[in-house]
Image (tube, rainbow, N blue to C red):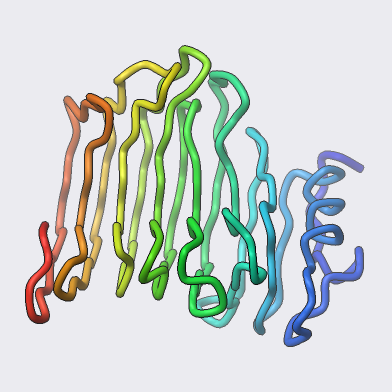
Length: 212
């Protein structure tokens, strides 16, 4: 039933096993509105989350790792602009397995909801990339309780080659960004604009340098 909720283990996604659970979890997302992940470690390569879907872990005990060679661990960027809610919650993305990857990619959507998300150890990559394409825009995003640590670029807003520059009405509520030398907190790329937005309770911690 596409309107129901399911645990990804029903489709064969097993935590604490060092192989890609992408196919099993993707099947769950393709067939259900909300998919839950148990506590434990999962390995993903370009897991797609489409508009209208929700992926939720168990407290802070669901660890998502990119597979070796992965470019993106979780990709919730829509192929074209979509006015529909998409949610991700209670996930700890850890790039130690593939430090050059993008942890979480999103864009081309109104109504993102990210809550209780940690993104860390993408030390040669990007933690969170919001990117527009196909004349799309990303607005009315609500990001709550975000923790970023040891990412080369922690958060990037990118107009892209074919998207609009609009990232308006973004609401950050309670974010912690820890930086070391050579790392960037928030980056605007290719003329991206954030406007009519609220950044509430954002803390930057600097260890030996870094750019907010």
